[in-house]
Image (cartoon, rainbow, N blue to C red; front, side):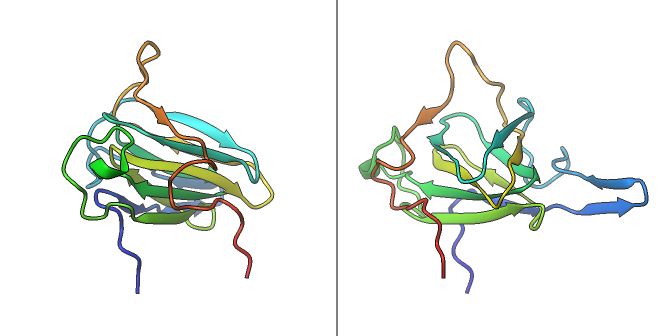
Length: 165
C-alpha cells in the first residue's frame, strides 16, 4: 500500500529520451498539470551524505528535479497551528505526515512542494547530486521567503541517518 502523499505534493514522472547523440529530459512545462507560474530556475549541489534542510516557504511553491546523482527528498507537513513554524491557517488533512522520495538518475521524477511544507534533502550514493528547482517566485535578496529549522535538532519527527537493513 502506498503511503499517503502530503496534501498539495504532486509527482510528475520525467521521461528521458535517449538517442545516439545523448539524451533529453523535459523537467517542467507551462502546460503541465503541476505548473502554477514561473519565478526562476536555479541549481544547487549537495555532496554525498550532506543534509540540506529543513526549510519552508510561505509564498513559494518548489518544483525539484535531480539531473545528476540521487537524493533523498523529505517533506514534513507542519501545517497545523499547534505544530508552529509560522503556520496560521486551517489544519492540513495530512498534518504531521512525512514523505520520502528517492529521486535522481535512477528515478527521474519532479516533485512539487507546496507552501508551508517543511522540506530538505540529502545526497545519497557516492557522487554529488545536482538538483534543479523551478520555484513559483523569484528569490528576494532583501526579504527572502525562506524559513529555516536545524536539520537534526528540532521537533520534526524524522531521522536523517542512513537506514540499513
